Length: 292
Image 1: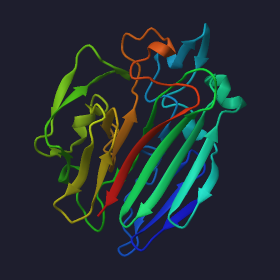
Image 2: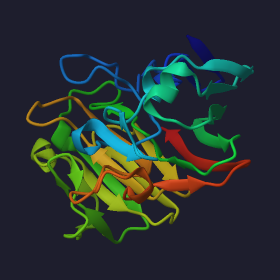
Image 3: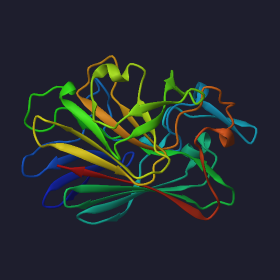
Image 4: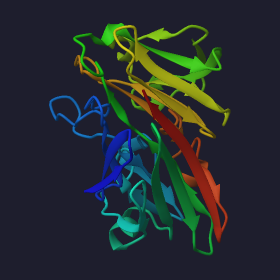
């Protein structure tokens, strides 16, 4: 386990999955990150790669071969190598190996970088294509945040998520685990969205961002604790908490990619929201978390 620390925050990162596992306020000892209680959801903030969401039948076709891959891909269960580290930053790296190539026949390098500056944790995903063919991939984050935060006895309904810019956002719904791309809708974030568990009866709420810089702020009127996620260039952001469990956390998930469309033909190159990276090039996906 890796520990990063400055005057305000102590952060831990697991080499398994390059997963953020704790963000704790040093002065108050407030833990902001969900602590992976398996009764509800046994992860903290997994990295989603090389897919986001679910594939039809957990499989896809590429170059006349069928490959099996479960929801959100394999990176979250792979051991990363620490390739750079200081007191306030770390870079963890995953490269293709025999296990990944059995599911995903591409050469790749994935760097996950965390850095602290005052009360902010900056996160960068860097995908490198070292091969000679285009690299087809999606990537995303899945951090969960405790509700309530800090010394309070509040409930899920005491929390809101507000957006900057405050506007009507195009939205995709899920039909089962798949993207219903033929029936887009909207989510009104002109005013803060009050959380309640029934919001997630049909899975995540998904905003289409179109790489517009957007900040989502999770907070309540119970105290001054909260977190603001700023997405620099994300395609989508999902908001999720498990249903029908009344879980004491919510995830705000930056995505560069999304679950298979309802009518997917299973061909990876046709996958809805897939990114294509030309040989010998690099893709950057960035977001930051401000804890207060």
